[in-house]
Length: 61
Image (cartoon, rainbow, N blue to C red; front, side):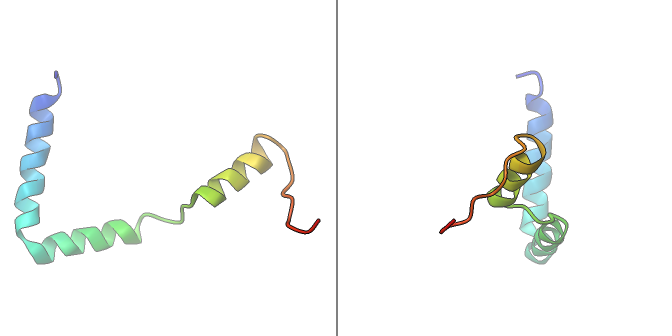
């Protein structure tokens, strides 16, 4: 609970931002635009190649 006051402060800021619908939607859109590509398939593929050093097996092979 040491960081509870920081949590409350952040939540209050979020609540204030959320009240401005247009501003909130803009923040959401910018966040989505900067999120980059991510998928579990991509993550697993990178683990397979770079950590486990195994090759993908395609269907029918």
